[in-house]
Amino acid sequence: MPKQDLREAAEDFARQLEREHGVRSRWQGDTVQIKGAGVDGRLSIEDGVVDVSVSLGLLASAFKGMLKAEVQRYLDEHVS
Image 1 (cartoon, rainbow, N blue to C red):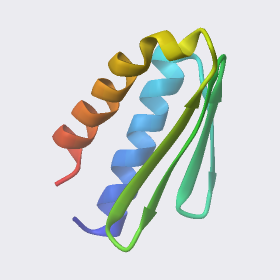
Image 2 (cartoon, rainbow, N blue to C red):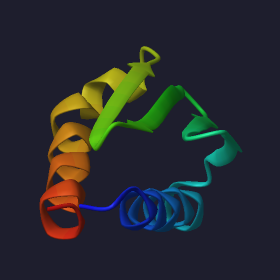
Image 3 (cartoon, helix red, strand yellow):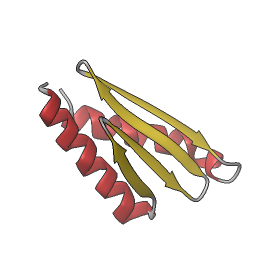
Image 4 (cartoon, rainbow, N blue to C red):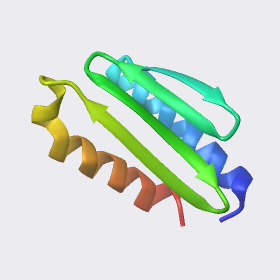
């Protein structure tokens, strides 16, 4: 998938997270930082690879499986 298409998919995902979960996102180069209540993460695009890293606070960790499944579902649908 072209880098620009990956970037657009990541931007859409960040906006979706802002809308649905009230997190904040900030782009720096090809990396978006996501911060919210109990969630601190980043998504980066480099050489056609999308890397997602998320740290969850105590309360948010109860939803780890659901959050992981949602990220994977979004990537499966929008990144090929």
